[in-house]
Each structure stands twice: as structure tokens, then as C-alpha cells.
Image (cartoon, rainbow, N blue to C red; front, side):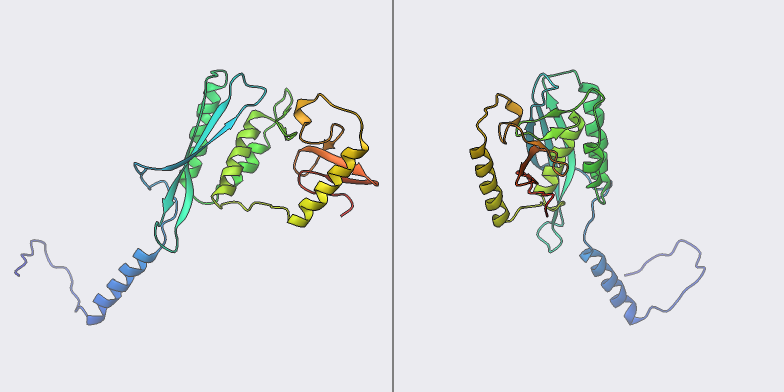
Length: 231
């Protein structure tokens, strides 16, 4: 095959047989390199999504938080599921502006790639100047933003980007026995709906922010996460 050279030749070199092999090896190495999350990845037509419902007492209507994930390096040893975007929907228009702003910023961070788990700590450390609230189960939320952060944390644990701190079966059994013993010794009833999952006079746990700490035999123990001042 004849190739016409239209430009002026300014240099040349003799191509060795090894050059082709090196180029093929380099191309193969590039192909084997796992794809990392970055802004250049185009949004596919189909994404896996999970929707979470929350009903904070500071909002008139429930909020639905949808987090869509993208699968990278599918069907390879490097396959991973990464969050790609987040949407928040609600009938309430009270928080519309900052909710839209928050979803766009969080989605941009997701698409940026890298370690996105820092978002959880940042969002959960936002405090409402008017005071927080207890969600169902006695868990304290310092703000609505913090509860959104808790939902993102739950999702990151579900897809494996954060480790889930699971109690052992022995710890669960011991806590169940302590709870049964404590409730048997208490005769007073409660009408507090925010703490119906735990004893009425339980106090706040500094570790998991749940109103589930009881004192038995001089030892403060959290019935939710197992944290104990007695070791």
C-alpha cells in the first residue's frame, strides 16, 4: 500500500520489532486498569436507585430521598458500585431552595470521585439553631440536614463504602437480658412516643445519640449500641 507524505520530513528512526510488542503491552495494561469515578464518566441511560422515606417532625410532609448508583468495571474483578446522584422530593415547599442546592452539591461530589464518605460527617454535624429533635426509636437528630446525612450514611453502608458496626450475638443477648431485667424493675408507664422503643427514663447515649442509656448496678449501658462506662 502506497502512502503519500504531504508534510516535510524532519526526522526518522528505524522501527524495531520490539516496539510493536511494547505498544501492545502498554495498550493491554491501559485496558486492564480499573475505571475510577470521575467527572468525565457520562450518565448511563439506566442507574440502580434506592429510595428512603423520612418524616421529621420539623417538616409538614414526608421527604423521599433517592440515591442512584453507577456500576463501574462491570463483570470484572474490579467491579464496584458508586453513588452517582441524589434527589429529594416532598410535597412541602418550605425547604425547596436549600434542598435543591444540597442535592446538586452532593451529586457533584459523588461524580467527582474519590472518598465521598466525608460527606456523612459533614452533614451530620450540622445543628439547627432552633434545636434538634428525636426521631422514632429515640435517636436524636440535631437538624434535618443531619438526618439526610444519616440516610446517606445508611446507603453507603448498604453498598459497602462504609463498614457497618454490627454487634455480636452475645452482646445482643446480654443487652436483651439487661433490658428485660430493667423493665421488670420499673413500674411506671410512659406516654412519650419518641422513646417507646426504650425505657421511659433512659438517657442520651453519647456514642449513637439514642435515648437508650440505663443504669443498672451502678453501670451506665446503652441498649441500642452496647456502649458501657464499665467496659
